[in-house]
Length: 147
Image 1 (spheres, rainbow, N blue to C red):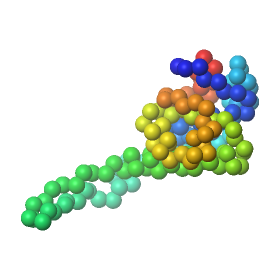
Image 2: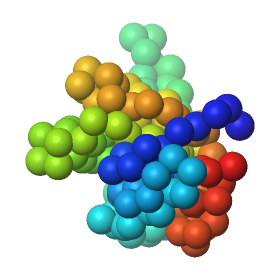
Image 3: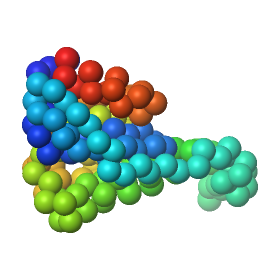
Image 4: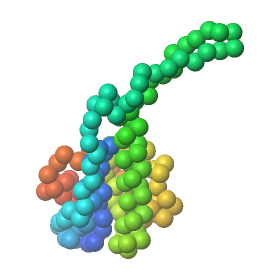
């Protein structure tokens, strides 16, 4: 991993498509001490519970029909959750006067987040780590950020 610095009072956002930990470093660059300030989660329901119907059919002008690709309700729910996280970063900037954010998320989630970040949020993100740390204990996350 590249040399990642997490100065005192930096915000660390660890998320994936269903869970987010918003933490602040109460330690310093050499001794990362993350305190959880907020936890966000969304229910992980099966597609049959959040979807409505099977995909339809499309018909061309000559009357031939073809199936429409099925929508992944999980993917759509994850994208909406990550969009909420992007808006939450704006709240950190406005309400908590955040000046440094380290973003940790799986590569696919990072891509979705990037496309929804405001210019202000993009400007204060000091590092992006393409890893999934959401299910790790806080002390493990601290060790990985300090390494």
